[in-house]
Length: 443
Ligand SMILES: O=C(O)C1=C[C@@H](OP(=O)(O)O)[C@@H](O)[C@H](O)C1
Ligand SMILES: C=C(OP(=O)(O)O)C(=O)O
Image 1 (cartoon, helix red, strand yellow):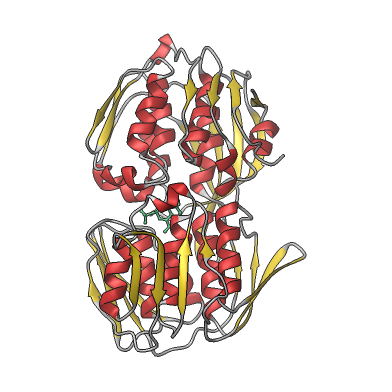
Image 2 (cartoon, helix red, strand yellow; image 1 turned 90 degrees about the horizontal axis):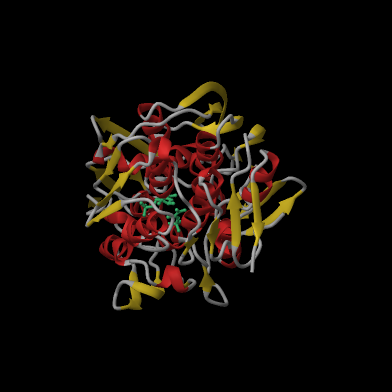
């Protein structure tokens, strides 16, 4: 079943049981399409995530000159070697990753493209990629220099830069590195706190002259722009950010015992699972087959009591999209959970700090909203009342977090609009249904 339009309610469903395959990773899927589009010749992508965000990137890569098509279960991308000005605006819908990575990848061609998105994406900051790409030699016209619609005038004479992003952002790092693939000289990105390194790993698979140096929490990536990319076949691993929802549902539904297979375990993505183990969760990982340079594991998850924890702020990049669902889990835990260092959450599909606090309050959970975080007062054995209507603000992660909360709460929880779930996890309703969760449309 595709995510329905409109509101849905989730109610306590008894023990969740069974096994689901992890949904394909969204970050890896965007990168596979973009890098395959940059490589001259045919690449194939297995297990591509066919979500609204990724399909918007597929259409954009096609409009920039690549041939992009589904071929049986796989996707086939034939890169033209050089991107061209598209005939129409590139509409990236709800996708920050799509628009920011494409701006970087397109910046090194003599071409012009205008990027647009939906109401949510049009509120999000683009200056963070426009600024370094402008320093490399591209030109942009954007609303207030920072918002969509934004027009890029690329340049075949981009220059490498040595850049330290002012925010921890894999999208910013990736935009600069993708531009650096075609820039003169060396492009360096220095991250005081490493973010997900999928662009670095995958660019090397496509033959990029790129290396990564790590020291403690920091990462320095260097790419030299004189080597053309060569096509390869990519297999997309499972998405830990999507797997978080069935895992959380099992942890709060008494008696549950489920498995999620093939979840990517890149250390830059598994901060939630680390935190959940500290909270006392019963999650066992069995290593599974690596996919395109990314490790994976099968997860076995059993219901059990959770306790509140302090989440180290330094862990934020490794679980940046998982805080709404962590806050829901913290509501079921005994004791207080503090999560800080999260100002970036205000610049996502919605203000996720405010939205998560509202989600909890609407369902009878006490929460303190900080400038850069949340303090959740767990209900423990008293249980979470539920019964609230969650405002999702075009934000898929708030919608899924609200519905999962309903599975463990005393009264059903309604999410006001679940359509956006299709942007990242189109199989959410099927997977949750297969595990026994009761989630259904309401008026
Ligand atoms: O690079 C990526 O694929 C992503 C990076 C993160 O964004 P930021 O780079 O803005 O932190 C994350 O929130 C997003 O869902 C995917
Ligand atoms: C922030 C997210 O995605 P994006 O930035 O690609 O819109 C997300 O998926 O939670």
